[in-house]
Length: 139
Image (tube, rainbow, N blue to C red; front, top):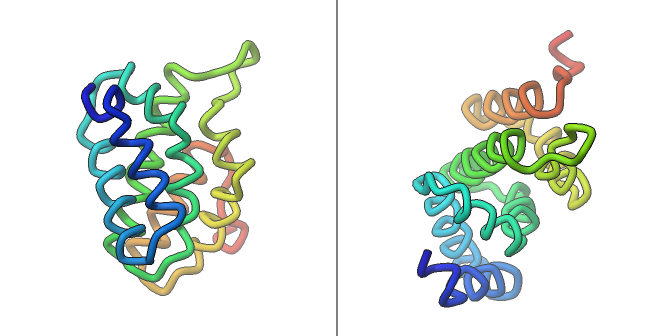
């Protein structure tokens, strides 16, 4: 895919990590849209290798509802991809592991209490499906 071959994704990630909030937001939204639209496993693998999980995780602490939902949808797709194509010899989803290591899981756990029900329900769903446990507050 041209975005990866031409280092466009790398530039977006760099800008998402360093620039002003509005620029970071637009970069992350662009990355999320690409993830949510692409079907090619090799492209998703390239995005994972480009450290998009870490970049998306950083934006889970924002207050923009549309951005949170877009980022969570992208992370959900990456986690699904990870379960099917990116596991270790014991069957552990390496995307889930990476999300946990970069504090993305902690951010998702916090979003379970978000006042917007779409955000909280999406966070709960991702945790239940990909991390195998339910929100303790709902038990």
